[in-house]
Image (cartoon, rainbow, N blue to C red; front, top):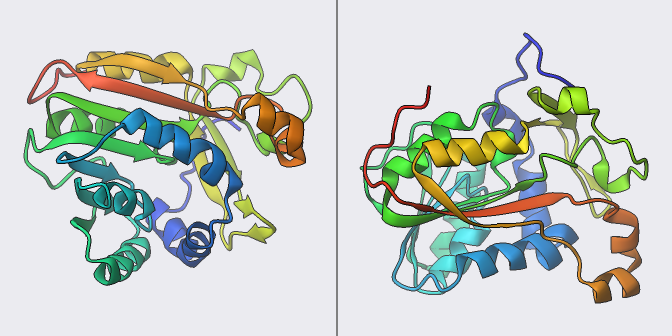
Length: 263
């Protein structure tokens, strides 16, 4: 579905409406895609976070923040959903980890320049209608040589219910280069989110060019996928992974401080 003049409802209200759904999914470990595929890939890309100042951008209910804080990183999580941040704070109060949570937008981060060593952006990029400003903000708050790790839905292959679509045509090439919008309810382990979510897609070249223009050098690009053993022994992956669904980009900031203006 291509972008239209009609705006979707505010992201924060949708995610607030779905907050309890996601808290249940995450804390009951019901999302097999995350548990067995994207989380291990994300953590491998992050590596050893000890003693790093980390920004978990779009942290949701805070599970990745807690994992990294549990490995002796100092973590700040930020999300525009008040309800998800409230859930993150309540959980963290019990765990007493070195992590704080703020309500705010990744398009306008309330942090000083050169504050963080690492920014993680886990399943967030597709929630942004235009990620340009967010990527610029990530560059601003990162120190020289800091890293940005992005895990997102695959811009080339993901479309509506892609994990259950066995057709071969997918997104038409003509529309691939437009700003594309997929609107659907989350469906995880037999549960359906109360409110539909809007995911935004741009061509792969947009993300790589935007990173380059903002001062990042891409050091790795992966497409997390099930292992041959997973594919041969688990029917879930045989049914649910008929094409690449995810992309993981690791990049390093090579120009410190304020980034260049993108034309």
